[in-house]
Length: 244
Image (cartoon, rainbow, N blue to C red; front, side, top):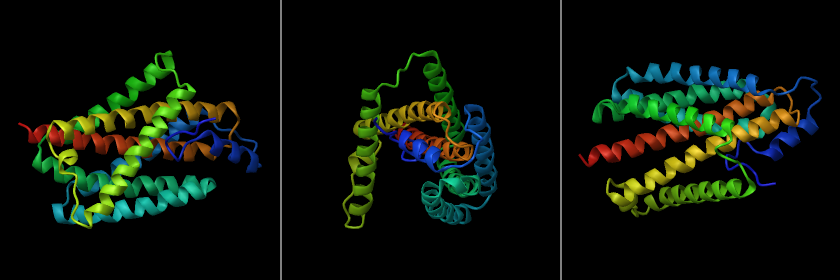
């Protein structure tokens, strides 16, 4: 079976959790939805806090949140049974990062944040509806394609980060030209399709009887995807604004 392109959510992880758990309580979709809501509130709380700060202070806390969120995210992935603690911590830390970067971009492009939030949640609910209605079928080829595309994007971002230390920058891709906007559109589409993959694997977790603590872990996986989608939409909107 092809794994989810979201490393936090895949069938193998659910199977491993089922084997190693001794709990009689099982994961449910509704439980995952409830816990996702809690994580969203955590992220909104800290994002609202940094939003009203001076830019330099907000960006400083944003950097702390980004690094701290990465560390806690790795811990969550390795110690899934502790996700009821680490997933909220991750959301709080990422909220610092989101508040900082959102505040900075809002000052440069007034109104961009509310547009990005609306597009992020609008995309999520539209895809959830399409998935539940059967308009989007999560076949093995679909999984393979999304996983390959996501891996390619991750490799490109990693290479860009490393090459940046040597003064090599992909200005055409990162700029506001046609190619830059086209690249951002593709990334937004791939990030959106990862949401569909997440929906599918959460349902699979319920079907195979994954332990209750996996609700927190699955909620963490959804938050990871939503944050990625929001950031990519912000990047796309900023490029479009630069063309005005």
